[in-house]
Image 1 (tube, rainbow, N blue to C red):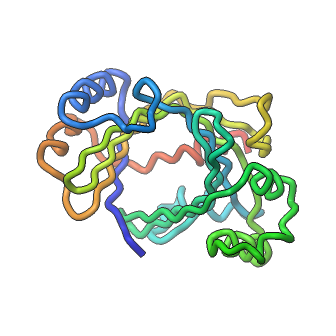
Image 2 (cartoon, one colour; image 1 turned 60 degrees about the vertical axis):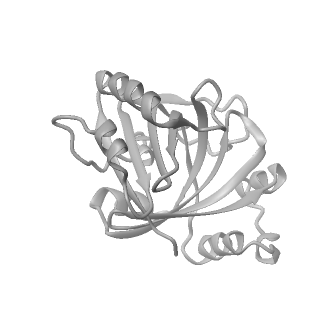
Length: 222
């Protein structure tokens, strides 16, 4: 498993303005962004005892969660992802889903999954059967991404976090989402080292690493 360093900070709106200006000067925009940003819609999975949520809240050192995600409302490219975390190190595995496959998972039609050639789809099926994990809630937000080649650095600013409440049909255009937090999250990811130019750019006084979770925020209503 390839692990990357991952650090999150909850920041203020003023902090975001400062960081945006600094990062525009030293880093590069993500080539997939539109006007410097994109909209993310994710469907997170959990079990009846809210294992993923409780592990996040309790700060369990080793944990994982599954989600289905697409960007900018484009359902022609959908990914199933598993995020694993060991202390401050993270790993993401991904597998492509067709729109029909994603919808079938939402609908509980999973008979096709054990026959998939993609191991991550088979793993999700196994854990749906043995651990009872199932679609739980939609998480929407806006992301401003920046990249830096040395260290394979990725810096993101996330805001406008919204919850689908109990709606799990992520492909449904009229699925209502509501704001759940005015928090802004700075996330910094890198491989072997974090270049000084990026370390200096993201440094803020009186800000320390935190454990803000967009998924946990979106579960505020249950």
